[in-house]
Length: 165
Image 1 (cartoon, rainbow, N blue to C red):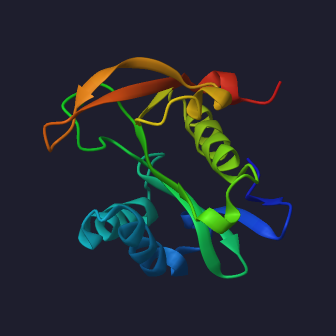
Image 2: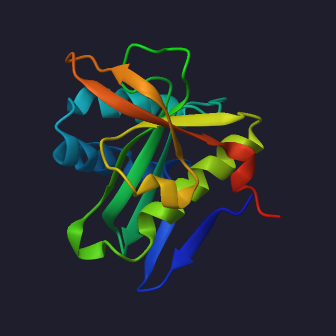
């Protein structure tokens, strides 16, 4: 398993486990993007850094220098009514100035490859964004009810499809 990778324009991808000092800034960054309580990110990131932590939860970052410009998480449940559909990729975000460079796709690939390496056969994500995740091998699975009562499409990927041939 490769520790980190580099994309054009000096943006580097990393696992939070590789850069644990970024946990607090990362929690604040995700909180600003999604308005999910800061404590939820802090708790999940602390769990991902704990000794003996498994593949879930996990957090991935795109860095330009030391600035976070993108990221995503892998958690057990992204606030929906289907706990059997796990783990969930969540909080996928790339700042507007860094979009259209393939960063989200590379972050997704990195996370899915890690899940496959851990023996996790499928991953799920909730999104209303049609046409984006399909480019990376995700497909519609079902509709779930989120904690706020809204219905949202859930997508799935077979993690083994992300492994290099």
